Length: 138
Image (cartoon, rainbow, N blue to C red; front, top):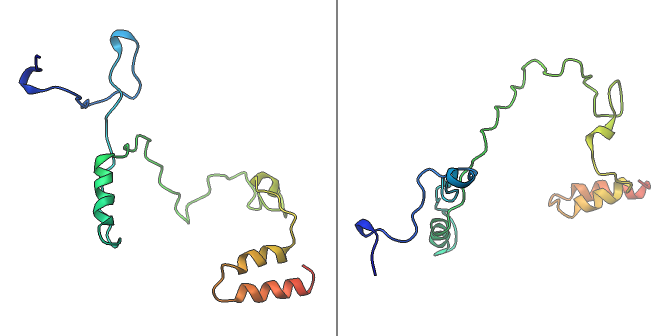
């Protein structure tokens, strides 16, 4: 059995992989590439933090190959939509109504929505609002 030069054999990760491989003689390896660094998560139960870290090292996640996101517009910056009414997207004033928001349509009474919210409100205030709405038939 012959070995590779300098004792190197087996898988060799490419140092600069291509995003998409070209045809024939222009083909390049597309595996490998930048990965996200492993991070230790503190505060987990005994042994789970090290196990999580070991899993990240064993199977690293791919790096972010997307272009960086643009910075958000500053709060007091001039508008980028000078010809769009400020009421656009609501059902009053000039401009398109709420139909442009592509929101799911719901026809349930407000009291039903408040009953769902009240299940997760530890203060009990949503329960009071729900009972008032239900009492008046909303």
